[in-house]
Amino acid sequence: MKKDQLVNWVLFVVLAFIWGSSFILMKIGKEHLNGYQIGGLRIFSAGLVFLPFAVFHLRKIEKKKLPLVVLSGLLGNFFPAFLFAIAIEKKIDSALAGILNSLTPFFVILIAILFFKVKMGRTKILGVLIGFVGLLILSLSKGGIGTDNMGYALLILLATFLYGLNVNLVSFYLKGINPVQMATVSLAFISVPAALILWYQDVYSIALYDAAAGWSIAAAALLGIVGSAIATVLFYVLIKRAGGLFATMVTYAIPIVAIFWGFLAHENITIMQLGGLAIILGGVYLTNKSV
Image 1: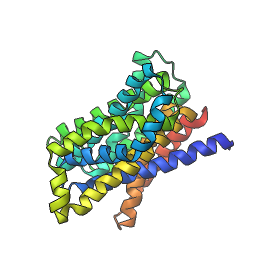
Image 2: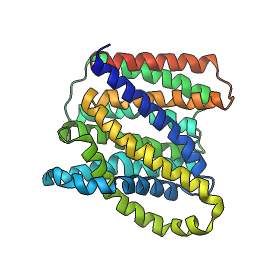
Image 3: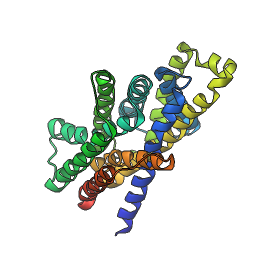
Image 4: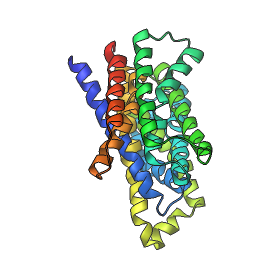
């Protein structure tokens, strides 16, 4: 394996672990917070961490590209953070959320073909399709979508569409910008509306006077610092190195991490789930084969 590919795979595994663990943090957060509060804390924490760096990096980004950088933050972090948090707070369990999130590569391909006139290689498309088969097997083993949670499942599908749109935006219009600069500036900007939402949701009073909510607030903040701030930098680096499609195949590995956490919690792991994981890994390998 070439050194460049090895680095890509290391980034892939780290991102899969971070994002695969994020659903657990959302689950902890919803014990005392609603979806708007979790989403707001996630984005505000990420932006607050990056604010000192954003002040320095802002002048290094072309003014004409700054609106696109902010748009990338909205599409790739702000709106999905709230959509996921609301869906998980209401009706979607973390395992199903991870599986639905894995539809992102399909939206990447669909948007690239329809709006950016990109021609995808057969091997890449085959890899995505094989990975999706593995996801269907995992979905069947974990339980599916019913009439009671259909609306909230659509929120996650909307989030994955926004992810796909953002990946194409970064790949075609922001590829020349340093990933660290792009992540720090975009998250710093979107932390402003997040702070307003936190004020409207009275989170500041909860933090001061509700001791029981401490763990939920800490989980949401950690979700922002690691799951949004650090992960966004790594994700943009991976897009720049290996391309948008392979980067989004990280979402196919998220259910693997979820099952890993389930194994540690002594949940029953079935042959069906292991077979689904093997198929997913085969699809990811094919997608990266020509990178």
